Amino acid sequence: MLGNESNYQDYLDALMTLFKEVYRVLTPSGSFWLSLGDSYIDKHLGLLPYRLAIQLVDEVWFVLRNQIIWNKMKGAPSSIHDRFRNCYEPFFFFTKSASSYYFNESAVRLEAGKSHLGKRGAVVTSSGVSGISYRRKVKRSSHLSPEEKKRALTELKAVLKEVEDGLIPDFRMVIRGENRVTNGDSTRLSGRAVELQEKGFYFLKYSRDGSLLGDVWDIVDSRKIGSSHYATFPSDLVRLPIKACCPEKGIVLDPFVGTGTTCLVAASEGRKSIGIEINQDYLPS
Ligand SMILES: C[S@@+](CC[C@H](N)C(=O)[O-])C[C@H]1O[C@@H](n2cnc3c(N)ncnc32)[C@H](O)[C@@H]1O
View 1 (cartoon, rainbow, N blue to C red):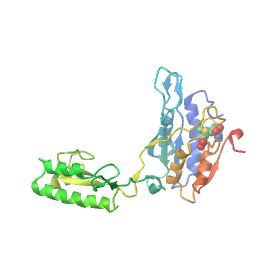
View 2: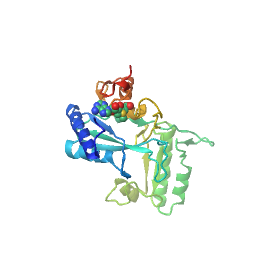
View 3: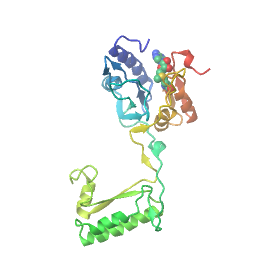
View 4: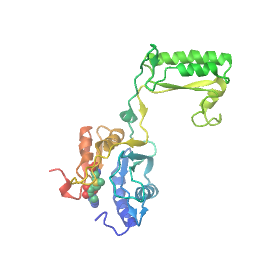
């Protein structure tokens, strides 16, 4: 039985046999999400999820698009005293195609914060930017010419008006001599570095649609100690891949469905699903 192999390579090979079949039935625009718990072998952390991920890329031609870190927030209770507690698991996002796969990024964006009016009646962005500190930095700058300062203050006023009118939720102002530029200061590397050099400043405006979710997901591990099933996934861990990667009429397949979290979440998101489970006791009656 899967999981009872005498060594880890046989276990990974058995999983590879199954995942080759998953690759075969996956639609060309589909994606494959892999969560595999790691284990210690003779006191060594086995790195099994990573070994498997490398095999999947090298032998099955899956495209690895992300390694999500599932931060379980509290980690499993542990009686171990000679190493740190394990509080995260990698969660791999593979696709069949390198570019023409389904990914609905707007379904999983973080909600944009709301601006409000500060004590003096000036607009303040969701992260607390009111423009006062930027205005001060521009005025005091020894790296901007008087003309550049004038232009920076005019444009800052216009950006604050965009916040006030609800056109953008937030922004950052990067000023010559004050900050390092994203992607480095080299003008050969970044168009923004060029803007900073020629104009003296630029703005980073946040999208009203919120920001794209990052690759560290804080999701409390809801698994109950002593429950009949040992490894039910938290709904949110399953929900995000389904919303992002399965179209409305698509089908979700979980070949290790356990008590059926994946299928329940798929149904709640209006997607069809198929679950496979070897142990009948886990299936909901
Ligand atoms: C980590 S749990 C599944 C969690 C589940 N996907 C969820 O969403 O909550 C792994 C499950 O795979 C099942 N399993 C193990 N070997 C299997 C096999 N060869 N075929 C099908 N299911 C298997 C186990 O019984 C167990 O329920």
